[in-house]
Length: 127
Image (cartoon, rainbow, N blue to C red):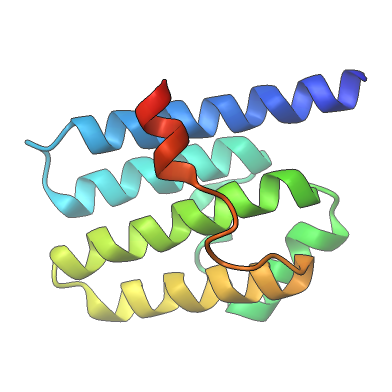
């Protein structure tokens, strides 16, 4: 019960951060992407600079072995990372966008998550 409450709180915090990023359309895409990285870092309790510098498989292994992410939270993180990749494409930072997509897909694979199963943007619109 307590763990479920904790996971739900993490999910709500992540959704709030993504929502702020979506609403702050005046910000440059790379700044909005940075806000998403910060939110994900806070969610998994890890320095975002370190987390997002890892190779895709290393990142997935660290998050799965370290117990920082569970199956419920995984989808939200993966979908957030894919959204960040779109922002990085808008900012013309293709290499970083490519890395973020690869990291997201490696994490999804590690947890058996099917991309698109979590309707993150529908939940954001409801908040």
